[in-house]
View (cartoon, rainbow, N blue to C red):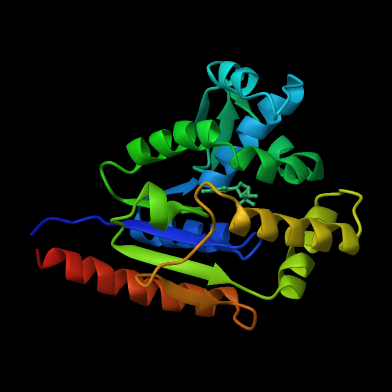
Length: 231
Ligand code: DC
């Protein structure tokens, strides 16, 4: 029997380490890792740069026709997101983009465009994608769905350390408030809110290190791949 690849959906709150786990799984399984949040961030950057009024839907829709979001790989195999062929990986991680992206992710026209692209990326399976609606909307048939969570304190501390290491001038309070605000908007928005269904495996990593998270998720992945082979 050939290698039957599966799709793995990883959803959860902001700064839970979804990307780190998704990358590790993709690399161990030789799958493609896709950071769907980077796509929402890239669209946000475009709309900010062009001063688009988020309350003016026709203006947003018009702007979207000029947006091309894709992923490319550098020489060492690390993928980065592009906005109209420009590498925007660093810029999309700024606090300026982070503070606007939840508003942009609420807009259904934005979601429609990105979900379509994401579904195309996963059509041949072998994808590990992290986000908020991957197991509910993008790949409702994903063979493995993981919901990641951790306490706000742990998450804010992690994100704060990350930004400080990058040289950003931020305060812990600012980061913590931004996280809470995004959790709130992401979970309460009308269009594809962050939510979990019964077919998710829950991974609360407040007290788990990376190795333990990886071991657990890898065991789930092996199980899902074995179950998939039986068909
Ligand atoms: O994972 P992240 O922090 O980079 O995501 C940025 C924002 O994009 C976050 O506020 C929620 C939104 N998002 C979304 O609505 N759906 C996704 N699949 C991924 C991200």
